[in-house]
Image (cartoon, rainbow, N blue to C red; front, side):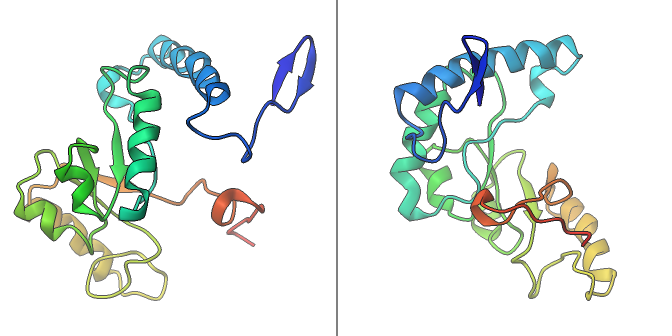
Length: 176
């Protein structure tokens, strides 16, 4: 939605390609304004993280490349991190700061990825730490020990403010 000639108007949605000129025009307005406002509020470039896509798979490799090219110049000087389980995105240089799920981290550890982060979410339920209600708390607490042991620099936490279902098609309120 945007204000066009004084009226609120639907300017684009799922029907507009992410690599199209209309979306690029939107990003050219949004990202510099957002960066300026964040800096005004005291957030420096090293502590604001941007991301392109959540868990892209091999099938999304070219779409990811296109999406990244769409914003690369607008995010120059900013850290871009992406949750991903496919080591190939890092190997090809598409993701400089990968954040693998803890059940897919081994190739990233083996490669010695610098300043590596990790995350867990809703799919990591077997043989790795997580924080599901039904799990004993030791399955959560061990994560800090493992991060120390493997020199993991950061932890990406998901879920506290997401109130929509998959593909953001329907509102979902977890507390209910």
